Length: 343
Image (cartoon, rainbow, N blue to C red; front, side, top):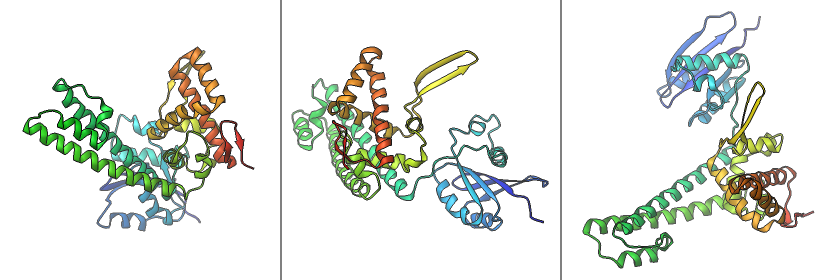
């Protein structure tokens, strides 16, 4: 007689795991194990090939899945932002979370997160690091610009972006000893960040060129090497999206919809998903509409009736549709403004 399938819910932390095991006809089993020091080995040793395991998407959930998958029939990674039972739970404990995961796994009602390949994950990490450095550079430039303003000195922010311009403007004013030290540190950090960004950009572009879809995306006027890399690692396998609306929702540029009885309200865009990808899409749209007569005409039409903000998002949705079909059909544009595709 074959044993009934076990459903195992895991609440994963950086130092421990809380495990709830449910099996029909058997009492619930709950245990907490350390993640290091043999705890993970003890957990995998007790698994059966027919088991199903589920865990929330966290920083180490991909590693956890790799350790567990050879021992079980399935490992589900949950999208926590869609799993409201845990996220909005009043009784927020590790045991309660593990129990809820195991229960909904047994009912096959868990919203699973998309799993990226190792290549896409590594590329995404590089892009996120570059984005953090860019934000830090902007913050330091704002700090230096504020020091000039404090002394009543009017200097354009753009004049401080280059090493020569920064040094020239600093030398044009007498600073206190403390301010001089602060400006020297800011200057050194700006130089270091600039060097780091260049190194990351070079590696991002080099690696992105080896991935499927790069040549297709780069043929779209308005999408550069870095933008193509962002889209590639964000979208992953285009086959995961059944239609353009699914991809738009993944980027977070679809409107919020609220329905109750006979009322139907449409609000602002959801802004779910990767913020870097969404920002990149908008930036590419602003460039693409200057070259594409179709996108320009569409943008101007929406702008005249609904305003600039809605026009940019609506045009971004159009460009994202083009990206979708470009990747799906493996298009390479001969002339994007005329929408001529290489045969």
